[in-house]
Image (cartoon, rainbow, N blue to C red; front, side, top):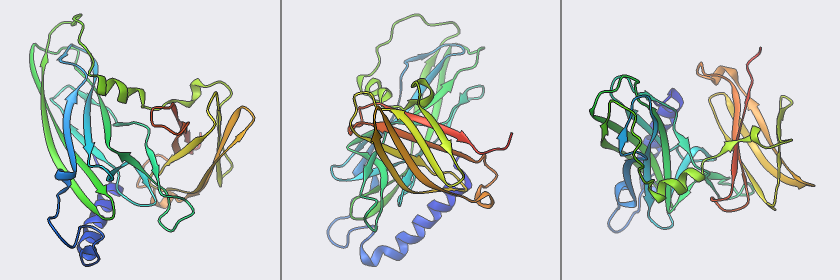
Length: 289
């Protein structure tokens, strides 16, 4: 479900779109206007052909994006709107939180526009689903409500629906089912837990978040902070010191804006420059014990 912050952001984007028409920020002033659906082809697929009782599988939203345009990550940065999906599943199925692959960084922290985070060309968003243990043989239908903002020199809102029906079984399925190579590659881009890297750690002194991560063979790294209600970030930086990258970012905490959600610092550190290079997610709770 979309939270109150996202709904507020969506309302703001719609309002800005109406105000900005005259200056061409949200749509072209000349020629045929393409829609968001023209610019981004969206498909709804699964990494399994048949669901077994108790099985955890993934539904995936695949975006094919017009060249030179981009959509946004879960935390868009200085501007934009998070790409989101709401899944409606049959009774008994448990829908997990969406999983986002490593993003790209656009712009520069040195410019007025600032840094934004998202995807060009293509992207895949995964949603883990767990089937009930008493699943019956037949079929299960899923609905996806997908929200995205696609931008270049102006932006367009996309809000579309997709449906998918999968076969179900009443017993464990041992048949080998080939994994779509596009989904397999996209899964490799999902961030891994930072804790799995030896000597890597996260620290916060009340103002500055510091992440130390083993560099391995990488010469560069990028910090992608995830803004949550009540948490804002400024000036992310990464430097290489010996065998470790030291990523820092200034943090401003405002509990009054938390919307009742848990206060925590979350983000991703991507090693290397390419989106196929490894990335690692960290999470630091600010809740008092």
